[in-house]
Figure 1 (cartoon, rainbow, N blue to C red):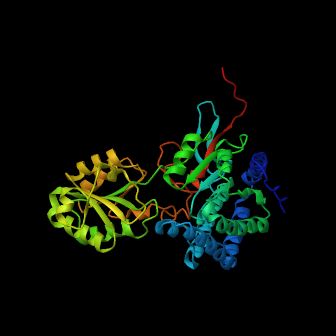
Figure 2: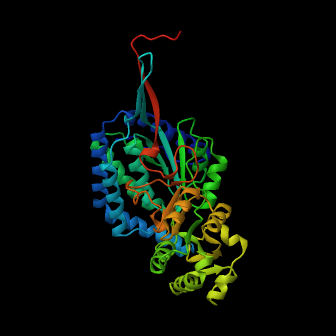
Length: 430
């Protein structure tokens, strides 16, 4: 059993607490990096079981979090991200089962070659070390991040949102139980035990070199703070200004189905569509039914002149609307001049997160897929597939939109680095 952390009564105590969390994580990471695949899998199996057993306790903690959020006047889309139910807890447990079934990346030989002098060089996957995850609202990230870091041989320091603190503690208790059962150090997955925002600052400073990478998952203000203040590498996306472009060659019924799902399935997730682009060459037949469908479904549409003409219920868009991640039942809509116009608009206003084209024209689809520089680009599919679970990763820590190391859903492989192993027979360099 891990020794309890000392209580906090001052800023000095908080700094000492965070340094101790970092120290414990570093020690745990050394052990976890050498853990056998079957031992990590045993922990994941035990954690999934513990989540299912603790369902009522997790739901009770979540009800308290939701009640506090409602009392504070929190919005509907925020509550959707915060709220848990039987299905969402089961989805968390199933995510752990999927992660367990994935191949263990640690120690995998990515490439091997022999030099003319006989030396054999191998590129081998290794854990990153200690991963700090800072997130808001979504308590399921506690399970997702813990499981992914564990499978990749990393220790995790989790700092959940103040709004989901009770829920995250209940979920973390199940993860700790699974680690104990498998004989792995409980410090391999630690949850910061305070709502004090100063704990975030301590993590961004790296905890005396103990944190190797930070992954933020939350709103624009959180991610912007992390990118501005972090003294360690960051896997992050600033926002998800995602587009669906409906081409002139789109099947009208398919377009309606995809657009409605992309916007309205869950408006508060980062994969939700925020802008609808319609090809000018087919606007006369495609625009009006798409806009009417969205408004009838309870979505506010803010559009250009063509959109306003297509449906009098639409509201005029301004330049800021093309740059906005609404995370709500609001969408910007615009007519563009073909696939080139769509690509230009996305390049100008997009966030390089997730963008989709709906078309039966294979040439237009390939042009869009090749030229749109986003982490995820889809053809004839909803942007809501921007999710590690939907990619077969079991779960994700987030969607990275940068171009270094990780891009797209951050899963098990993205939480590893590599080293070179060189085997010689006495070679020396002339």
